[in-house]
Image (cartoon, rainbow, N blue to C red; front, side):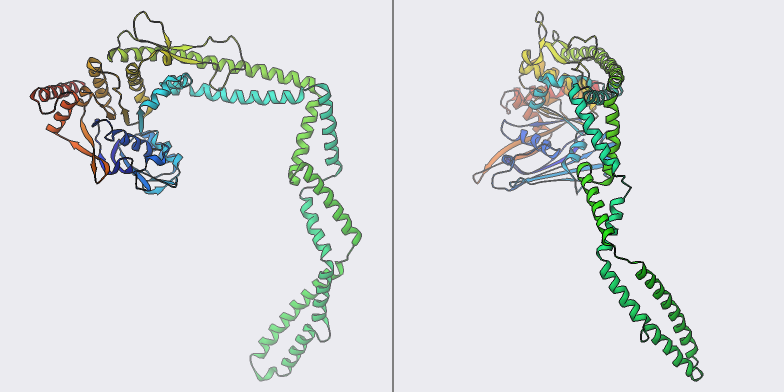
Length: 565
């Protein structure tokens, strides 16, 4: 549930803080006071795209902060999956400035917006004009139907997606092999040439790297030879290093009897002399082995050029050339055995098409069976909302008898919600027959049967009572009260029946001071609640009649809530 909400510099709001409770929370106030700004702020902090026009005039940055507690397992699982510590409280903070830059934080640490949106989708569900439009579009109806029991479709959908991917691969392979004869012959000639060119090169693994190193040695052979000769001369000459070391040893041996340290020094020098002598012999061998062969260098250079040419054509790496060779051999084999291969692929294609059809049919049967349950529940909900003669049906296209190219990863179903509000009226597409007041109740009915499927803890209703009044208003109020027993409900309302059902009241007003308009909020209690309910009845708030009527509404609402608790 949303525990606290802090809003700064959003539209008319300069700086406010709201505390919400579990149960039924209502936002009251005159039109234009800023109630919808609060809902927009919740949407923003949960991930909605902002606009610069939302920033309060005279300010450069807006900021919204929301804390959540008592969230469910689905939220905890998402936090674990995303590597975010679950501390039992979630603090979302978002800011946005006039430069178009935004920042998103979760529990004080900066995260990408898409991660916040993944989490927020498990916390809050909205009802408003946007959701109305979603419900009116037939393309969304299949997903809405499945959302009632999504788990029953998972296995078939996964299998269908895998089958269609395999089918696409088979069809692409058939197109490659089964092109016209002239094209196939051209491809055979091309592949044969490419295979021959690579095989005739007799390439070896890492050959290019080995030849590069060999060429470097050839290119530097003169310099290497000169330095090795200088080394040998410095050590092996009669006045070189070794000769001087030997002379030094001889000099120490002549005076060895005069100091106890001389024998140790002689031993160390003798050891060094032998080591230097070994190094000298190895250098001499390297020098003797180093023979500059210009013809050999040209041969290596030419071989490298040939390998580079093959890498440009079939690479970019030598390993890629080997892979290209293997694939080309396979493609050539397929082309040369096209007729037999096409028959083999066609058999696989038929089996996969049948599998795709069977899975699509299974999905369709499950949807059709589920639709009966959803239709029944929606009609019962609508009856409770004062639409006893309303009919609702999930319309399906005619099921094909075999595989068609129209099958997608969703199967072959096209679904559209059909609706009739009154007796004697034919069922028609929802978008063409439902009125505004009917739409509010239909959405509430849909939300009511899907709420526990979403796994969210908070339901936000932006003027769910639009276009309704009287007894229907009572029904909507009772439905919202029932929802609030299992969910936190936030609701903007202008109906006294709905307001009287609430557990927590926030009154929103706007005031003008120093040529500046500012929204403020007040947590109502006691007589202030009764006064505002009285005002919603259309009467003056200070009359005994309107106050008495408001008290009666509130008392009746409290009695109803006790019955359903």
